[in-house]
Amino acid sequence: MARVDLVMPKMGESIIEATILKWNKKVGDKVAQDETILEVATDKVDSEVPSPVEGVITEILFPESAVVAVGKVIAIISTEGESASDPGPIKVEMEVAPKEAAPLVEKVAESVAEQATNITVARSGDRFYSPLVRNIAKEENVTTAELDAIAGTGAEGRVTKKDILGFVAQRQQGAPSIQIPVAPAASSVSATTTSAAFVPGPGVEIIEMDRMRKLIADHMVMSKQTSPHVTSFVEADVTNLVRWREKNKDAFAKKYGEKITFTPIFIDAVVKAIKDFPLVNVSVEGSKILVKKSINIGMAAALPTGNLIVPVIKNADYLNLAGLTKAVNDLANRARQNKLKPEEIQDGTFTITNVGTFGNLMGTPIINQPQAAILATGAIVKKPAVIETEHGDVIAIRHMMFLSLSYDHRIVDGSLGGAFLKRISDYLEAFKGETI
Image (cartoon, rainbow, N blue to C red; front, top):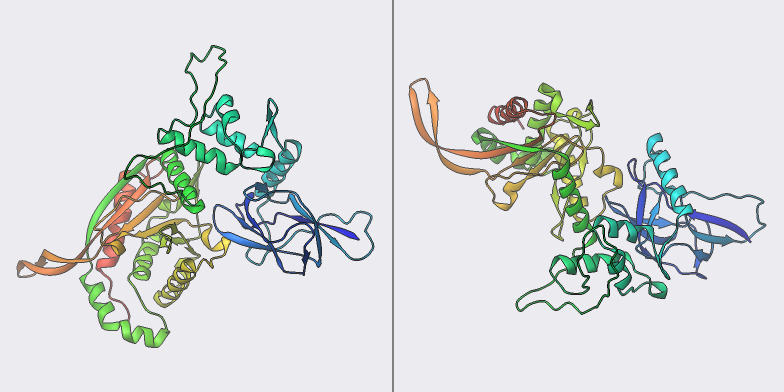
């Protein structure tokens, strides 16, 4: 029997670890080549890991919910045939993953894998804790006494990620699940702990956050802590744009086979404005400003679960209106079906979110790190507006909308952010479209 090491595959240029969601096979099960063995999740998307060979699962090295570094062995498969003297691990190249990762990411992944090999568990008294549980405890200021008092649901009573996150959630809600006497930091305290089941008050429903909602929450908090947010607003008269779409939408669909919405038109205006103001299309690395030559536009898309995901249109400046429409429709449809590939939600340089879809006039969006700005497009509504003509000012019913731009005030000041936002408005107001 030959031994094949199944390793955690690379699933994107910036991905250095993944969480095991579900093992579809158990020890002793036979697997065919390319048959799904397990499901994993990154902070981007969920993916299936296929078997690189036909054989039998002889060992599973990590349980469900474990966070594993890219490149680390997660299972052993035995195959028929003579054993090689040093077969080495077979790395699974998933169809959803880019072929190569950046050298820096590979080094980080190797470092993480090496640390995970050397430090598998931490110990407190007679109890073991995984590095993940220890890290969560440190971030949430969970004391050793509190940690020891948590009832573990893992193997041999070990505390799992779910256990400690549940304790943290109860503590934030004021539940008296574990009580520790408070003492000065310099004192040595011997505390006794007690446990009690959390009982919500009347009229309270508890909903556990799903994995994606937790990731979104962490990302939003991180963005606010990273970037000093400033938001500017402008109102645009998009009457010509609305009239053009209403007149040409049927002919456009017949010619290009795509239904045109306002989103590709907004993206087209943003791309033009970025070309005029390239210092908005940037990110920060320490004290350095990285000016992105590619214009990759992220578009926030709502999922049936209520969560949001941001697929990215790469090199949007190379696409005309028909090309943008096709890209928008394709990414939005596959986002709702959970069929996006990891690389399709990476490397965005600027993001657009359409709060008008929900009937909102405007919003103050949170920057999608590590980008420097994000645009919110509000609802298009009819309202009276003053129009300047050669015969004087007149009041007419126009289609108006608010645009709001949140930007990182470390690198985008008010004059740049305001001028960039006004330029987007100018392009939308001047929109004439093409003859269909």
